[in-house]
Structures are given as structure tokens and as C-alpha cells.
Image (tube, rainbow, N blue to C red):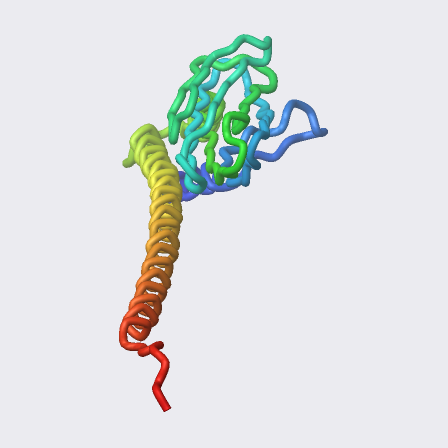
Length: 227
């Protein structure tokens, strides 16, 4: 009974968001994803706050537009260029450890004068703060008597499950992005096939009309009829 109560308390501790007292300290950094339309000849930048001594993973994909490519740069809060890529369809980059401050992510479509691009990107943070909170909780709820089920085993099992669920959500998000890119590509191909098919049909009809007119001219007798 005692072990079950401890396990339930630990589960609630992991699932409920932390309560901040007096508004002190920075807000927790959340993972995020965003899809936006990048016009032709334009550059779009985003700023993301990051804590110190954490891990930041950035992944982007061009899911729509001619060429499916874009220029990408990533700068640190100090203005140091960490990543610079040109004419890429996708990319994955990890910054570890991070610096406290705002990271700058820029997507550049200046090389394209006609085609706009549909871009998807995702930011994933991995901080040591959760581990420290779990250790503090384990010390706070440790009973004087030996429990039948060790708190460390429960904590490890719940943490592993949570990590796998978060990774599953991230993989599903990436699969949706891949599916959107493939669908846009297929729809573009279908439009081109329909357009050129209509052009071919129009050309065939025009050639048929010209042939009929030419044959009629061959059989027309323009000689004067004697009276």
C-alpha cells in the first residue's frame, strides 16, 4: 500500500507542470514546431530563447515550392554563426551545450525570384532541469522504512516511457511533414500532366481541322463552267 502511494505521487509529480512561486525565474522552455510560407526573394528569421547548458535540436524541411530548397543559417545569442547551408531541402542540427539567450534561425529564399516556399521547422529542447527535479523529489519522499518497490526503478520506468512518447510525437510530426511535401510534389506533377495533356489535345484538334480544310481545297473545282 505504501509503495503504491509513493508510485502514484511520483507519477503526478512527473505529469503536472511545475508551480512557480512569486513569478521568480525564467519560464520553462517548450518544444515547438511551425510551418510558414516564405515568399520569393525574401528572408525570414525567427528567435528562440534557450536556457544555459541544455541541448537544442533544430530540424527543418521544405515541403512546398519549386525546387524544394532554401538557405538556412543558425546564430548563437552572441552572434556567432553556427550553421550555414545553401539550397537545402532539409537538415537536422544539434547545439550542445546551449548558451542562455536568443538563438536566431533564418530561412532565405532570395535566390528565387518567382517561386515561394512552404517551410516546416521544429525545435526540441533537452534540459537537465527535469532530472534535478526528479532527484529532489526522490530525496523528499524517501521513507524511513524500506519500500517493496524502489523509487529509482519507478522513476526510471516513468522517465523512459515519457521520453519514448515524446520521441514518438516528434517522429509523427516529421512523418506528417514528409507526407505534406510528397503530396505537394504529387499535386504539382498532376497539374503539369493535366496542362500538357490539354495542350496536346488542343494541338491534335488544330491539326485535324487544318487537315480537313486542306483536303477540301484539293477537291474544290474552281474552273469556270461553260454555259
